[in-house]
Length: 295
Ligand code: NAD
Figure 1: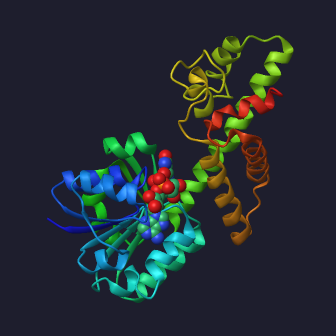
Figure 2 (figure 1 turned 180 degrees about the horizontal axis):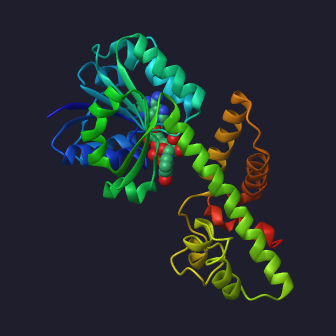
């Protein structure tokens, strides 16, 4: 049994922490929200007042925080995780954050004698509860091997993407493909409507032709062809517009930092920004089809 400090007990963090607890480990939770702390205590977690206090006792620290600045603060503060944890402690950051922050914090942790992985996830709150998340993991082979049994309690597909930051890189590259392809599929359905081509006919043809992609065949943005897609339940998420926008902005930040040309990624970020600003941030990201339909 390991002692695990789990920092960030929100929509994703608490169900992930529960799976570590169910795996037989001692889990000490930390959060800033009294409501989330109460839910964690009710689930059987111990609580600590600060991340440093929890890390002092831990063999493993897992973080599931909103964004890069939160991660930098929790790890890097004078009384933070890096300063307080015992040398050799393993850190896993599963937050979706910018690549530069991930690499900076891992370098800081390694310089202090710790091991650290960036390990963002896909699979949403359903996957977090079921323990079926996909982990995209960046960091050393040694840290990855040590993390495996813990990641396996929270996820099903665990992929070592490469060195530090490559987990975050994989996540934003994948979601940039997704954001762009959803807009492409939405534009095609909007054009088909105007040309008098039935939606089901376009689906039947493109889903077996060169236009085939996940946004069409698994997550079709118009109601009908894929009964399980959010289009059939008034675009309740699913994966919200603002979450897609966050990932597209991270991709743009990374592209600027690395000097990569991503013109369609930039356009997708701008379109999702407009759609969110019109009050649609909480809808499923496939609702962008309404924008293409001029609604
Ligand atoms: P959330 O806002 O529900 O949870 C974040 C938690 O972190 C909150 O409870 C907040 O109080 C806590 N927190 C913030 N600063 C803290 C600090 N300094 N110390 C301790 N706790 C602190 O967010 P979420 O939906 O759980 O997402 C977490 C991360 O996972 C994000 O990076 C998100 O992009 C990513 N993600 C979310 C989903 C999803 O479907 N929700 C899917 C994949 C990835």
